[in-house]
Amino acid sequence: MLAFEQLAIGYFAALGIAAPFAGAGKTRTSMAALSSTIAIGTILVVSRTAEENVRIWVPHIYLVAGYWMPALLVARTPGRFEAWLKRSDAGWRRFRVPIPACARHAVEVAYLFCYPMIPMALLAVRAVGSPVDAERFWLSVLGAGFACYGSLPWLITRPPRMFAGGVRSPFAIHRLNEGVLRQVSHQLNTFPSGHVAVSTAAAFAVLSVWWPAGIVMLVVAAGIALGSVIGRFHYVLDVLLGAALGSACSTLAFFV
Image (cartoon, rainbow, N blue to C red; front, side, top):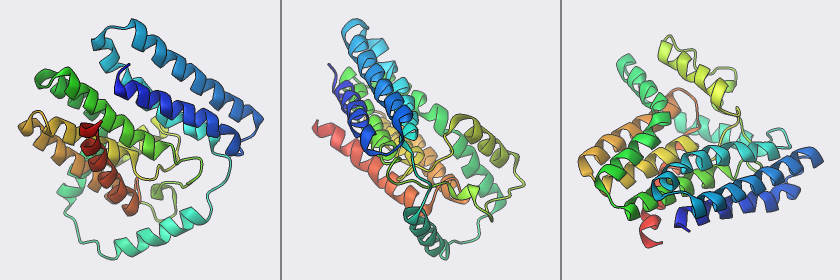
């Protein structure tokens, strides 16, 4: 079994074990436990029956499932942690500087790019790197994503765009980003930012095997981070910790 498959099994098993302690009610707890069991069973079957090329691409599904499953366990309305995060954000935003309209537009485009970035980064690693590099790629990306998603049932917050005073952008790209999030997200905030953590981890994984493509990916990841703040898709602290987490996971993957 590959290391990232073991990581995914550990994550889904932890969700299933933690489910009764989240206070989400019998029905949702049962759904979370069943989903965890199905996810673990799927990984075991894929690891034993699928060819290597399939096993390298299937983790996209593990990442998406890992994002959605913790939302089943959210049992409370946001409270003191969200209030603290909002106060922290207000403090950080005192240091913001005026940003030209063209730059705002560019980072919003970068934020939208976070969805195709992972498969494109994997393509780059597969094109130039070895099977070991692909395994390290998923160790860093899944590790970063799971660390962000798994905190959701206990650190419950809503994204800043949902509050009064959120961004009312004239840019069509911002409205597109908001429309996409309404369709593909659970409308809760991951702490740290999963978008930033995963894209940062992917960029560093590419950088380790193909530096020109890695530089491009790092620029995009930086744009995703800036777009998260400017578009108010995440709090500033979410973004800073997400970038640090993604960097740490990409480094730790080399020691596993």
